[in-house]
Image 1: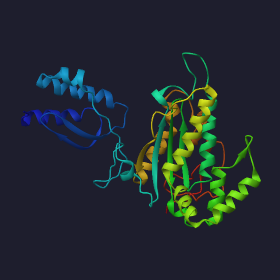
Image 2 (image 1 turned 120 degrees about the vertical axis):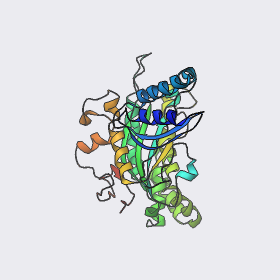
Image 3 (image 1 turned 120 degrees about the horizontal axis):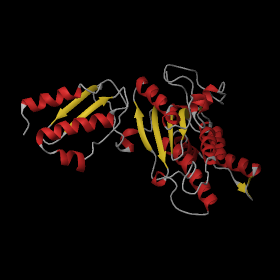
Length: 322
């Protein structure tokens, strides 16, 4: 059991690492922390904190050898009860009827370098990063989704997206049909057949029930990510003459609940190549939104106006949040 001196010593130890401690709960057999780390010292601080706690109670073997701290990052929302853990059920995290910002992550299976250079074989898959970037920006011109930040890394992809279900309500049945055909064109001998696509669009536009379904899909975060990841996986498998998973699982998703969270997450995504040592300067970071912004003005079919929520999107059909 912990006495008051034990608890006070643990609380005092928290002040040594320069962390902003938002909440903590110290129990007899575990503790929970919600901290903000201005410096990259979370692992070191937790190791020292656990060592001190363990030595004091002669259980350091368990703390150091059997249990590593659980690191759950949350979207920062200043009002109590708004922080959403990364492990929240998708249905609780994404409201299909409401607009919002989301941080999405997709990782290659086994976190292998299936989009970069394989150090074992020396084979380069760097060209797949361009596949991903091209597909991402093309989908943003079809869906009611704004791409605010992205970084295509060697074994994973980071996205900051703004989903706007209300935007599709302003689209006519013809426009919904045209967008869906653009997404799923009819091909003959590997080439898009314009006549067949026009006939398909006309048939869809005359089917109100089907249009209602497609309207919902064109504003769906899950459908956006499905249409992004699945074609890349199929194309990579064809190139490798193999079958099986390319992505390790469904995309991970985190709601960004306020302006601070959106801007912090965009900065995190933009700095990924710098932290990974892939580039020394933001303008030299390949396949990232920050390089795209720095290279010149971004022109999109329905680009929203700038606002405090992260500036201009890289590509969007979504209406910009007020």
